[in-house]
Length: 223
Image (cartoon, rainbow, N blue to C red; front, side):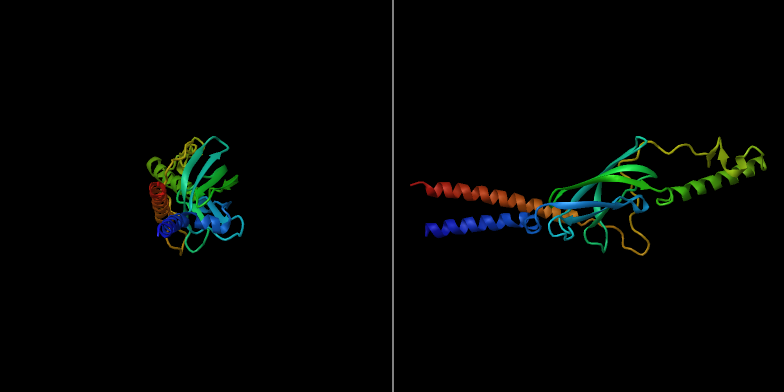
């Protein structure tokens, strides 16, 4: 009878500990991250299992950080899943135009890392259009107030800078709520929160159950 109880307790503890380790064990335990580009300034990466190359679709937790050649920095930013593209993740925030050294890493469901240089075109994230709109507004208001002065202010230039604007800010905000959705696609939604929460709950429950089982075994092993 005692042997049956011990076997049942050990089986229950083992079953509780298995779910949190199942994904990594089934695919080899290592995630391969590949930075694939910056569409619209949003950093995008592809996450696959290193052994079987299956896309990582559950329990993914990853971040992105970047440093520009002129000293600007961005991140760390969280990665969220891209709709209808299994294993594809991107940042909600967007990088300004420039040459960036981008690093991506994940801790769940298994460790992974990638780092490479990426360029963000001003036209890709709308900076060029925004600059043109600002310059046009400045030119119209200046021309209306001065009656078309000959110093170039009517064309929207001030001190040789388009639209009267100076250099872009040297520090990128740590959190910019820039949209990721492309035309015709659904808004980006996070799929990692629930999976991460349940994984943490399962791990904690398994740990408590294992400790309780050990204490029970120790108590009943005494003569």
